[in-house]
Image (cartoon, rainbow, N blue to C red; front, side, top):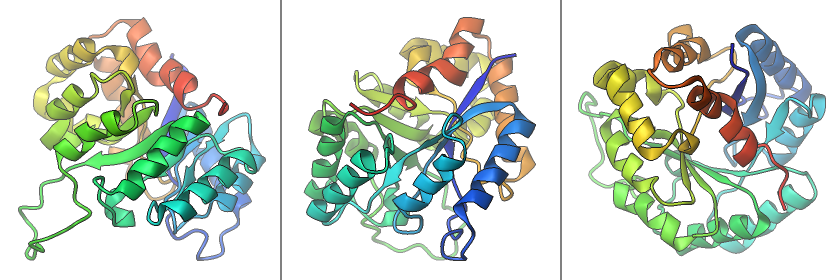
Length: 272
């Protein structure tokens, strides 16, 4: 049985607004971790819905098991950078989470570039939502969504911020998985498996998925579940995702890297 570090969990998006205490949310998260064999979890907030202070207070409940990331809305950059610096230096948060669709920004913005570069200078990794989904069943689709970013936008960031460790969450989903694997050949780009590993494994098959992991290198993948404790359906949850990884035709060492070691090296280390 491998020890597991879940590199991608969220507090409920409305927890702070509803007045739920950070301790209560953290204790629920810890109960979920114990029930699912998760040793450590990386808490990824999304600004402005969850404040960095809220995450800090959650981590205080069990700092040996909970790793807190910061989040900032990157525009305007001056304000975002000040808040990021405060979150790292004063609150001890160990990374940055950005979510273009929920935060409504484009990766081509120079404000985003400044925030990414500052994260690299601070020695913290940045987890960026990178999931394309099939919207063909939607009745109405806007002809213009400036927060929707192309694969080329994601491919550009390693050049924009070459000293920043970038983790693309969800591996691009089924629609962009192969392309994002190509982007992750950059030395400073990694992929987290959250949620999408279920659909990718189902469509490509375990052998084919393992082929891509070996092609890029198991050291480039981090296990994440995208869990919101109490809200994520069981069929999409951590156990189902761990089962897929357990069945992959990879060595035990490669699985250990994906399930624990890579996250501990990249996400759980203190900032410089």
